[in-house]
Length: 259
Ligand code: SAM
Image (cartoon, rainbow, N blue to C red):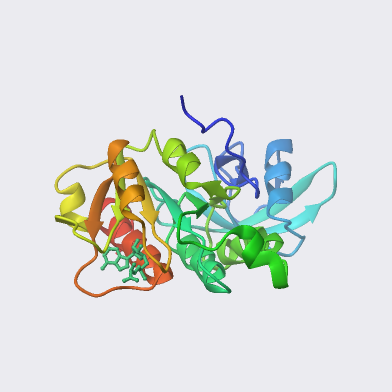
């Protein structure tokens, strides 16, 4: 059984957030957008005057200024054609054990810039729970907004999906379909991260990142039982947010489009 269908995406990210032209547009000509594109613009909470990254049916990306936008229609002015794709051909899903305080916000911002496809906050044995984090001040409602801002800033064509907080068991199940599953483990891992993929060129990678207190031995065994390979990031112990960013950058660089 896969949980994928029941996992809820809380920010309407993913391919549906890509703003698409329905034909190859002419530069510097006002172009009417379809109802689907208008819907995608609303996911970004776009406003007239804003500059966005749009994609045409041939997968060419453009920078375009939104000229008009009302509930019925929208138009934009494409002014630059980009030399290559903006979204990575590699789908990186990061399962991040919930860190304390502001660190998760940093993770959201930096993983968005690094081009990951999906971010799944996860509760593990030694992680904070969402209730503990939100007890003093509820901050989780700001997460989708942080992702939108980071996506705009780095000119992504698509918002990464932000999923609802998962238990460890749910996270293992929802990562089931990833072609490569790597668990960042500072314990007795026999493999480094890059050895973890070797010459394999997967199209999707799931990265499991532990909390400040680390994964328990039982969690390592449960992840291994469903196909996760524990891998090391080297001899130093990194903060959980550093580990998430470094691993995403290495994977994107070797297997995706970074560098
Ligand atoms: N349990 C450890 C301790 O207290 O000694 C530290 C956990 S570390 C701060 C947080 C998470 O980042 C780990 O669970 C792991 O997923 C990842 N991590 C940090 N350094 C790592 C390394 N050198 N290799 C692999 N993963 C690492």
